[in-house]
Image 1 (cartoon, helix red, strand yellow):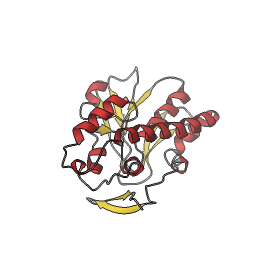
Image 2 (image 1 turned 30 degrees about the vertical axis):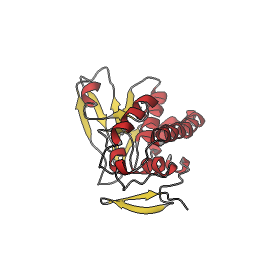
Image 3 (image 1 turned 45 degrees about the vertical axis):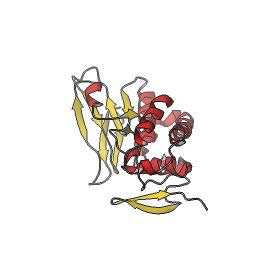
Image 4 (image 1 turned 30 degrees about the horizontal axis):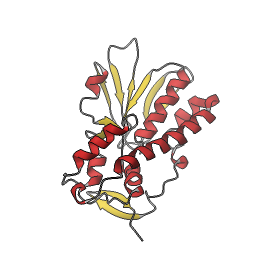
Length: 217
């Protein structure tokens, strides 16, 4: 599933292709800005949503399946669109992330639930959450108050830097066929991620979802 880093790539690829900032991303949301439209479109993609750029340069959201393809909303302005979202993982500064993690220290919610709660921090799903937590040996299924969170903010920053690096490099290398890489999104990005936790470490259940955690040997 596409998460914050994949949406960050998509927005940048589209803007580079059209040579103007017609989109922006916030967490798992992509906002479409059009001077002709009275509202801002808000697209999310779920598990199967995609974007299609046609030969006439028109852009639309399409589905590659019938389930979990995200949603589309219209908002009067950006602030209204973001009102139920937490800080943006892809853009938040280190101090803001540290401050957020500090609010989690007494929480009885599981760390996995907090990290993927879009009203807390927007843009992290299970894949990147497993990598963030596994890098510092934290357990997504245990309560935040029962774990040592000293290195969590740093891990969140490090994984963001890594994601931006691999996706920026891919974008730069494919400047001549931007429409194609947008149309192939997000599946063309998944092989670029050298994941060390997700689907590689110990599987654990959190609710109905499959997670992965790293344990000391």
